Amino acid sequence: MAAAGGRTLGRSSFSRATSNPVTSSYGAAGVKIGPNGAAFVSSGIPDLDRILGGGFLLGSVVMIMEDADAPHHLLLLRCFMSQGVVHKQPLLFSGAMKEPRLFLGTLPAQVSSSKEDGRHRAMGAAASSDGRANDEGLRIAWQYKKYFGDDSRAEHKDNKQEFSNDFDLRKPLERHLLNGQNIECVSIQDADSLSGLQDCCSAFLSKLPRKDAGSLTAGRIAIQSLCAPQCRYFEKDWDMVSFIRSLKAMVRSSNSVAVITFPSTVLSNSFCKRWQHLADTLLSIKAIPDEDKDLAKLLTGYQDMVGFLHVHKVAQTNSQVPVILEASTLSLKLRKRRSLVLERLNQAPVDGSSGPSSAASSSCSSQGSQLDF
Image 1 (cartoon, one colour):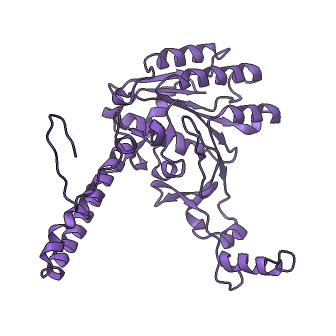
Image 2 (cartoon, rainbow, N blue to C red):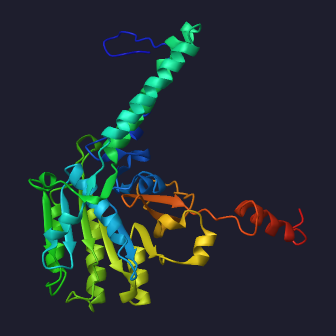
């Protein structure tokens, strides 16, 4: 292998080739470069990052359709904002409240990984001692274990920890993280029009121009309940559509991500469809009742579920490869009432059957006369 200066660098046949730097390098704290040079920021929920193929795409607008029965959309919005604060990324928050800065006190705190790291170290030490005992006679294999074993897992763990963090919804974010940060808060409750919010977004995004991947600085915009009834521009549907179009154009030419939540029930069907088409990534939250016996019999792990998350659309910028989701509807769970978890829906066995697979096979066999191959 040729190197600079005319020297040849050899590499052992046992060494693992390094991965593509375009897909594994980080341009800045909290920014991940994915395939085709696409840059992502974490949503604050590791499961959601994995489902969306890397996280929220830089230069995109994410819209979350709220549910009128429960404010579960705030779980996603708070994790998104906390992830930006932890990575010291510029943040602009706008809400339909008189003092939006008070909302920062509800952001969840980062989960301390000291106990988890100690448990992994103890398990690693036990595994190492067992390995030395079992492989005492295989010295050559033991010598080359480092090329295939713990190094790659440790590197993957560090990268995951750097890009996305877990948050404890029961504990508030440390106050010292909020002080001295580039955080702006704007109230849209008393505004007669959206021109003031548009000017704030324009000034915020002007500080985050599109740059090369080597010097990325990502910003985040979080807008809560854009079409809330308490806003004075509530009945000006075309003004809100014009604002979303302008924001989408500004975000597309900057290193930032905008997340907008809105109650879809207060909009007419035609304008609700317009909002959905304007979104690059479209999600919706649906709450479930606390005591639904029929649903509890149908789904496993129902006691931990608080709602459903439906992925309607995934952003596809700078890529011709479509994102194929394993599942578009996922269960929204609160594990130990602390961490937010997204899981694929699992159907419980019904009438003594072995599970949904047996039910599906029986239904297919019943139609065998019509579809005879």
